[in-house]
Image: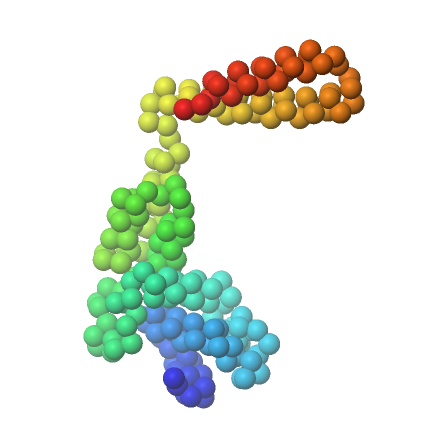
Length: 202
């Protein structure tokens, strides 16, 4: 563990060159944030420390922090401490691209195969954020688009029936609580709801 004074200076030095070596800065920020060293240095918040001492905006600091942590968990070889500046791969992934990959990992709509392609683009090919963002958009557009007209009709039917069931349920409760209609009508509403539910069962 570095002395806090040494850690503080190292973070400042890394911030000056973070565009070339953001992983190094991310590592320092992770330690400083986790152990709250910024308080020892007179800052009331991590964001204030980043902005005033390192000249790094809050949004950038958050992306650096989260992107580094993501790599530490998912791609530990890229953040191994034995890397020196000379050994660092020629094409290190951009922190914004890594952040997009991190968000994609959390998105249930993105299938494992698509995520693997995104990982290749970010980690192995070091694609720029603009390219990665376009790739994510394409994946999401394809995921949202029904494969054929029959599938689109099925989705519309499901949505419409679910909406009607919700209306029937709330209306039936209101009618029943206020005793506004005879029991046989309430029963008919219940029977209709069950028949509609049968229509959307897989």
